[in-house]
Image (tube, rainbow, N blue to C red):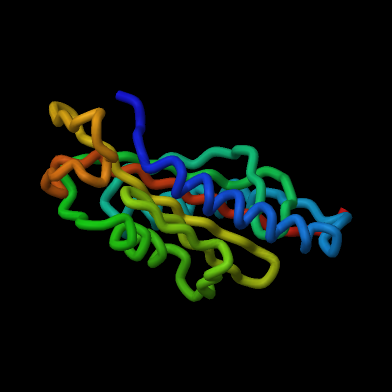
Length: 172
């Protein structure tokens, strides 16, 4: 099943962050993003799994910081599950953020959509983003004629998707 969302809302948020980030990118020239150490990434995945109750997997992936415009690689943690008593993407993000401990919220990296949200965090030279969204779970049908946000289903009928990216910024 294809993931549907209110694309114009997400696209506008991404473009706004990207355009704002382009202005600060020149100040960041020479910087690069790299994933946190693999053992630490695995540990964070395990802590996230414990905090949210969703099986997670850690890997490495491409990453672009939309605030600064800097590209690199990230510690990439993903998980999906249905039959959860989670009402909103913000609730799932709040649970996942427990794994980050004392990281500071960074509203410049936040975005909100009707069926998904993203929240940013910073700690020293590290950046983390947590994305959570939902789609109809197995056996649930929603109308293709309406936005996904209009699909009235119980939280337990949603398939929740969680993505966490963690990077360190380092000078070249």
